[in-house]
Length: 288
Ligand code: GUN
Image (cartoon, rainbow, N blue to C red; front, side, top):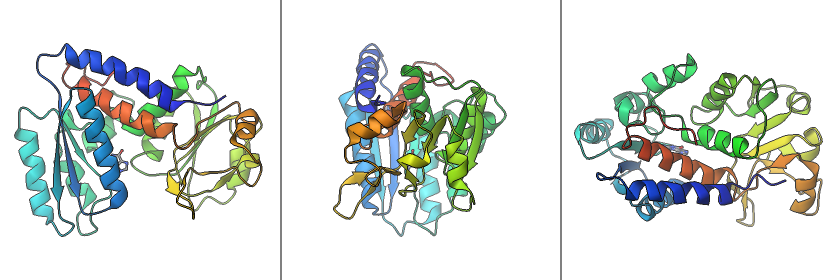
């Protein structure tokens, strides 16, 4: 069966829209986009478009790729102090001369809709409730919950150790009593580890997994987004070597998320949930 993030995100966005309609003061998401990364620009436009369609205010601050760190930090400070702004998102990656650490430390944890600040990440790591859960891992858990995928006691292999997906995903899964293994580019026996998993969550950004590396009828969540040589969007799963049609892939797995239409739309829905939760006074962010 397909883990249909596109369909579920539509349901969630509809609910958010109704909730925003009832709010006297509308949430306001401020996004900082530094540099000219094409993919980042597309993601930011998508976030802005979605927010606006739900009645959420949004502001995008575009800064050139040679913006100084000092200037970027000043923009964050202004957004922290702006009473109208309820959520702040600094799109990653940043230009190389800017310290990610300095940037995430500057964001007000109460407006940190990405869960990037040390306070929120630290809370997540000690099993306390952050003000916001990280958007992609939260979106994945909402998707798995919706399809009744049991996590308690299951062996989940997370591929990728990024601060945005892999690490926070592992913390959230531990909190749900899963047995978690994190694999990354230096992992030696990836295939053997994947084979032992009940659930694989792959956020490598490269086609590192073939269908038959994964146990039959296990769950596969594909977080990867890249373009193949023909410009088609693909995930981390290299299914073309084992199967002719995606429908055969769907029958092989217990559940599988497609790219596009799986984790991507759930990440946006999850960000919107975080954005409205700071207005509704629901600290920490609601898990749908
Ligand atoms: N770049 C890729 N994914 C993300 C995300 O979830 N948040 C931010 N701020 N930047 C990103």
